[in-house]
Image (cartoon, rainbow, N blue to C red; front, side, top):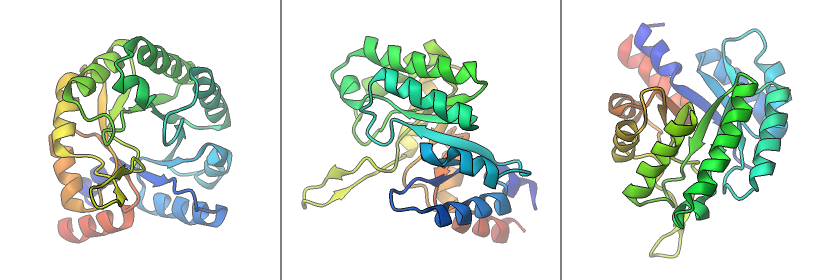
Length: 237
């Protein structure tokens, strides 16, 4: 496999998060993750133990979402959920912030919850990615403040969105935007040098992945892993 394809594969956190996915789906998607040797799989909390077993013998890491997708759990619950996930074998944690608290500018609360989850992760030698949910947190100044907080408390990644931040559209339907190049550039600019950037939500093609990488993203959430990496293998072979 060409080095550029390996590099792109190791950007991808293969997402296995849809509410309807079964254990059979989990097994199938973990096989895909191993086949393409991605960075990690990102699973729901109950699936961590099973995922660790399914990935045994591979270089693919097990990640887990916390407070997903709406971020509404109390801080203590997010910490407890993180503890359990780490004990079950997760080495990467993607936590959703309390969106309402961010929108009202309660930065003390946001700092406390990000710090609490970050400290719990680091105690277990896991990394933490902090999901801003940019479909709801849309003000530039709020995103900048979140980057500053993540830098201050030592979070490992800032991350755009969940892919489930559905916003009601003018026609009455619900949809989401997910990661944008503008947000990746903004998050990279305003995060400290030790904080990495993850794009997530709506990254479905190789060209989009390459653009995100160029803009400063070091990881990307993806469910379209096969399509993107098959295209990379064809293009760069």
